[in-house]
Length: 447
Image (cartoon, rainbow, N blue to C red; front, side, top):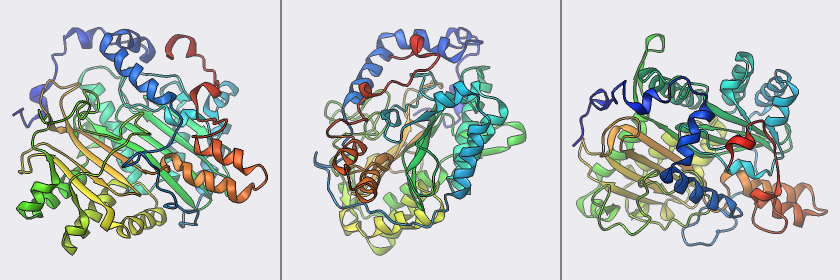
């Protein structure tokens, strides 16, 4: 069992890994990492997955139709539109060209979560002016709930905190993220943005008063932050405690059914079920088309109180949504509890590290305690957490809503437009080879 205090697992400040990285530009830092056999194998795997046209996460390999519908969910897009327009005025011509993509561009799907740059998409916030960076954050803030924005801000501060602990703020800081704008900000037409980098990836697509923010990836190592004027805080307390409370509330026979594997790296796991980068998580970066069977126990077997606790878990994961879309999403998940599954890996004692998943046809959330990457613990610890939110059955990135929008608004020629919006048929713009968006760093750093 690793120490409960992350400081006991800090790397030595004079270790070559840290010394050799200090002062480097992020892309220069990335070069030897990307060239290593282990990273190369990971990147090659991810890029091979990225080459596949989008279909979406499914439980059996077949996308279930008719789950998502165009609707006004009560989101007011005007502040986000104004924030996006303000951002564009603060960029120079080269930055605007690097930032902007068509609404159906394949780069939606090229997000990642390691600390080293794996592509040169969009603009890097650490290369922008302070005004432009704040304008990006104003757009993110206008697209999210106040508590959700605070969580994403704290993920960025946690990244800075790790950079401060190791004197690696050149690599890890609150601005070491890519930002992309898709489509043209509009009150009626689809548009959106994504932001991604170390331990944070957000994909936001809006159509009028409706939005989808998924996939999302939020994490931190360590999750306990204490730095000067920002004070002390910890991340993912609700996601951690709400999941554990539900598992501990189940009677023994349902706990047994929910537990798919007893150990976090279990000899009984089939090949591919544990991955050195994602560990137990199934829906992390580049896993847009994964077949993820339902596991564990169906929520139909829960008591009303346990079903309420399950919805409380979901709400903790999607608290980044503005109130209207958040309420809508919770009602949708509640309407399908008889088809929602809860699964668990590991122990469920108060001090145990664990993984769990809530998996509905409409939403999938994952929580995982991880081994050290920037800390030395070789077993999962509660101070390194990854969380993921996915919209299965073809609506990550709002793709199914985008398809429906084109069918509704552009009847003439809609077959072709809907196909490339969905990303799976015809001349899909979702295929990585269909669109070339040049960037000053592309010749050195993309792969």
